[in-house]
Image (cartoon, rainbow, N blue to C red; front, side):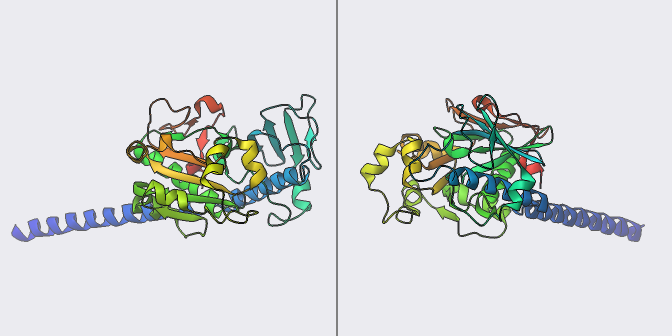
Length: 312
């Protein structure tokens, strides 16, 4: 009798241990999947990088201004730019539609023209994949948004999506001139452990002041960083910022740190973007992760059926 009870207890403990190991392995595999771009994703992003470089090459040295790109759509055989304002003068190999609001190009033609590492730099290095809509990859340039961006929803879903966005910036071919700075509680292992391999584009900082100093004197194309007065005057003027440098900084903070360090009052450079993990009332830009994997983009108006954390 006693032996049977002991045997049952032992088997129960083994089953619990086995379940725990399986969960741990699944979590580890999930973290690796979030941090590494799949082959299909990398190939799509290489095409996007080529397309954006072609845009920059077609508007050189003080000519026509670079277009304000509302959304980038990669649909496999076609790459499409939906512009915020009509512009019918699309540089080769892009072709504008009759309205001038959309430019498109055959992806095979882009890839025949060169590798993603060649050509000029471009000012759209914070362009990231939000997810898929009807099978098409939807990307937006976070730098074009004129204020902090709140990422809201279930805490775990928010964490996974943030890790996917950060990983794409720091390890993908589009964000070669972008820097991500994780600040305070956003730099804890709960965030960083899901990012996989470290990158020279990824930094951590303990406070707002330390974060703002990252990269301040190392902007490509500048001899020394901008002065505090220049930074303040640039404000959110995207045109002025783009003319100075193609470098971009993405700061990532939690909602608590946003409130405690008064990030809402911080005069960021026009090339800076702030991503807030959690809900902040009255923010203009809000990305809400839904339990079914969709992403509500609010005022941004970009439809997403499956967010990017579920793609890799």
